[in-house]
Structures are given as structure tokens and as C-alpha cells.
Length: 349
Image 1 (tube, helix red, strand yellow):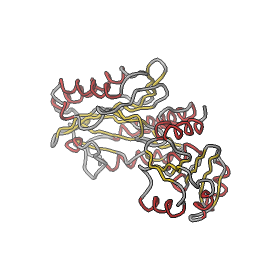
Image 2 (cartoon, helix red, strand yellow):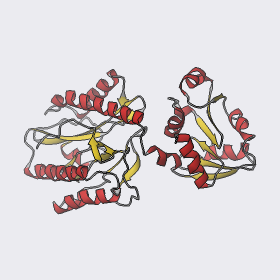
Image 3 (cartoon, helix red, strand yellow):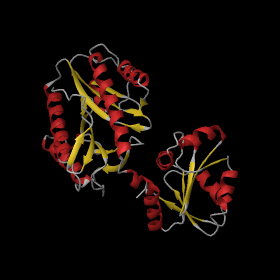
């Protein structure tokens, strides 16, 4: 069953006759259009149309898997209005702005607008072979760049210089950062999202590097924590506890496992080391056209792992004013278990 067929089945279950797609990642997933922030898609039971403007006439014709209509609002809405009279039209409530919703109400007064959440995102959790290949290539590039930059993580180096080196090497390879590179050294390691600063790395510190590549629209995500010199006994203890939790959760990945159970497993191990309260975020998330997408690996998640999902496993422990550790791998859920896609070494500390 094609993605559009799956979507139409989901639309039928949601009780809508059409769906107005505005989330850029969903636009790209449905059409292949690589400038999805400037596109919308209308999906009906028997058609799908990409709406974009004249800047993308050639690009849309070359890339889109569905027919295109080149226009700007209000003509965009007028073109679609004839098919929507008296129909229930779903819209992406987690993406459409208030102004965007007012536009739909103004131009489609005879349609009943229905807010929906996560319809396409749910379908995107299972990756196609082509998508898996794209994510695999993005992670292979990230591994290579991290390995090339690792010798530069030394006492006297600035966090910003490490991050800039990573970004430059990704760009030279035709990619971009999947997100702002995190380089957090010493006490700044206690910040899970400690984006690179002007701080100078000191001898005896741990340095957390969280990075990903966005290549051909698809993302990777990986974290390594490395030692500069000899860290304290306490930070070595924290590192080994996080590594134990990470490796145990990775080994438990397989179809049918509840995401919440994986989170609990890692959290229980860290709690056993007295670090349960220091684990300040969920265990992981899905990765694809977005660097954070479903499934969600957290204690409240209802998600169950299925073959074809690409997920992160990333426990961490963060001690204010002392330091922190996070170790993250990118995994493909396979028919009988998992495949680790991130191959940069996890160094013993």
C-alpha cells in the first residue's frame, strides 16, 4: 500500500473527506518536494495536489510525485474550494497558525474544518528502504566527521571551535547540521542542551558532543562523551553508569517492545547508581525527515517498536555545577532486533 493510500485510510478513520497538509516534513514526505516550507498539499479521496508559487515552477515539476498548482494565496484556496463544499476538511492542528486557520475559514466557508494531530507523523514512523538508506548515509557522514574532529578535543580548545569544525566539515561534504551542535565541557556538561560556547576546555574534564548531519533532507543524531586527560573518580563513575544503561537499552530493542519499558529499563539502572534524578529527559525519539519525530521513548509513551523505525537511545546524567554525561546511538529496528547505525567509538573513561 502506497503512502497516499495509507493516508487516505487514516483520513477515513478520522472521519474527514480531505486533508490540508501544511507541516513541511509532511509535505516533503507526500510529494518529494525539497522546498516544503513553501508548499502545501491538499489530499482528497481521488487526488493530491502540491500548491507552491512561481519561484518553484521548475523544481516542483521535476521533484513532485503529485500534480502541482502554481499560485499564491488567495488563488491557492480558490483553486481548491470547488472540491470542498460541504466536505469535512482536516487540517494539521499542531502546525497551522491561527492566521492560517482564519484564511481557510474565509476562503472555504462551506467546508467543515476539523483539527487533526499526528495523522501523517504516525505513518512516517515506519521508514521505507530508500529513507533508511538516506538516514544511514547521513549517520555515516556524521561518524566520519566526528572521528576526524575527535583529535581536536583537547585542553585549551574552545567549545565553539570544535562545533565550527564539525559544521565546516559537514558542509564541505554537502550536508548541514541536523541541529545546533552541542559541545559542553566540564560543568557545562550538566546542561543537556549546552550549545557550544566560548568556554575553553580544561584538562581532566569530560566533553559531551551531540551532533547530526542533514543530508538530502534526512537526519542523523549521535552523542559521545569523551575525556580530556584524567577525569575525577566521580565523573568516571557517572560515565560508566550511563554507558551501562545505554548498552542495556540498546540490547533490548526489538519489534513489540514498548517504548515506555525501554525508558524504565535505562532509568532503573541509573537509579541503582544513585543517578535516577540526574536523568532529566526521555530515553530517545524517532529520526527521519525531522531530527525529533515519532516514536517517543519516554515513560508516558504508548508507542510500540516496529521493524522499520529509526530511533535514538540516549540516556544521560547531569550534575549541576559538576558535569554531565550523555551517550547516544542511532538504531534501526529490524525484523528480529536492531542494527546500530552510529559507529563512532564509545571511548572507555
